[in-house]
Amino acid sequence: MTLCSGCSSDDETKPPEEDEPLPGPEEWNREVVPPSAEEADQKRASCGYAAGSLPAETHGPDRPSG
Image (cartoon, rainbow, N blue to C red):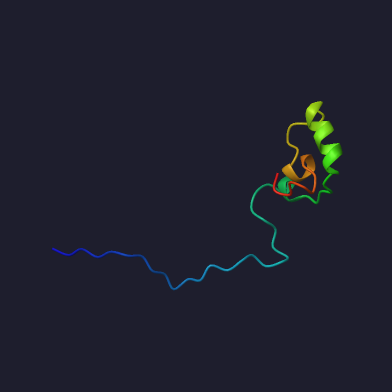
């Protein structure tokens, strides 16, 4: 007995347009300026970031993804 199954779709997944907001709350899509690596390390060590801070706000350029 042979059983074959598969999935296919004619829909192509396309990236969002430049002007389209990313999914999620508007607050998550705000512009942020990452701190320097030293500043981020010091602030994290002293629990200086508030709840709700975005990863980009709490990590320096040496860890861009948080």
